[in-house]
Image (cartoon, rainbow, N blue to C red):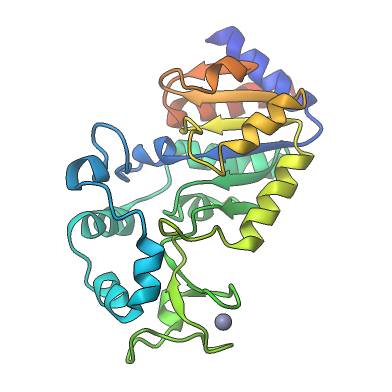
Length: 254
Ligand SMILES: [Zn+2]
């Protein structure tokens, strides 16, 4: 572990442009249940319909009624989200950004915890559960900026249909985020992959593209993943412990 930490720290210090990719494993340590895996919400409640976006478009009023008084997995998720706080893993990534070591963080999490922890260049590829998005003009709003007297609510800017910013099954990733993620991944010669096995596309494509170009991947996961074989350095353990140790090591070498 000691020498892997050194290797990862040196890798980041030598990188021209390092970014991070994070997933559910990072937020599990903040009490956010994952969707997949043994304790996953979908494992417990069953997979949601794969055509969630189509269903939203077919009956947005009903979707909003469910959204405003959630039940089942969504209720459990909302309760976890409202009480959750960033953990040392989130804070370490924000610190690495402050140190100009990490330039951007792409996350598959919708829980807003990176933002609360202080990450600034944050690309939420599956959206942000605390925000509302216009599906027409892609403007995002805070929940309390919107009038819910008439359902479905409409965009104050363009009168387009509003939905949760969380990307539903079957919904295209909003073009602004997807383009920005692609640009960051194209720039990057080093990527920290933390708390994700990076098997869900499109996020999975970014580390693979970086590795294929000869860039370095630094994996931070409790268990080996499908990505492990591609990684220059693998740091085994929970992100909430490994990432702060990595920050300390970088400070020592700097
Ligand atoms: Zn709009």
